Amino acid sequence: MGMSQDEVEAILGSADNCGKTMGTMASTWGNEDSKHVKIVFMGDKAVTFTYDGLK
Image 1: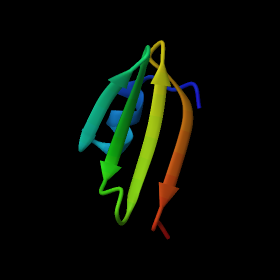
Image 2 (image 1 turned 180 degrees about the vertical axis):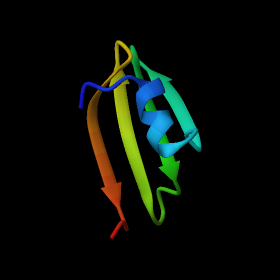
Image 3 (image 1 turned 180 degrees about the horizontal axis):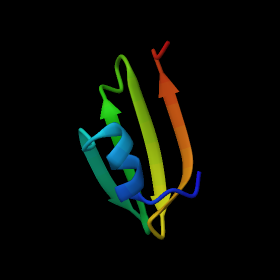
Image 4 (image 1 turned 90 degrees about the vertical axis):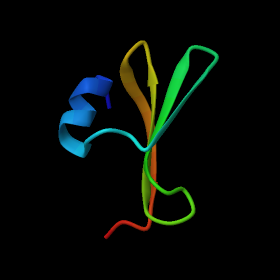
């Protein structure tokens, strides 16, 4: 939480999918139907995240 998108991408690599909605940017690494991490950025800071299928 609180990391910029550049800081997150330095760790996870480039996002597989991103979308902007009402001042937020939601970026997904992986496939939402299987293993993935989804992070929502507001003002270029991570504010929420979800994940599934990770060990």
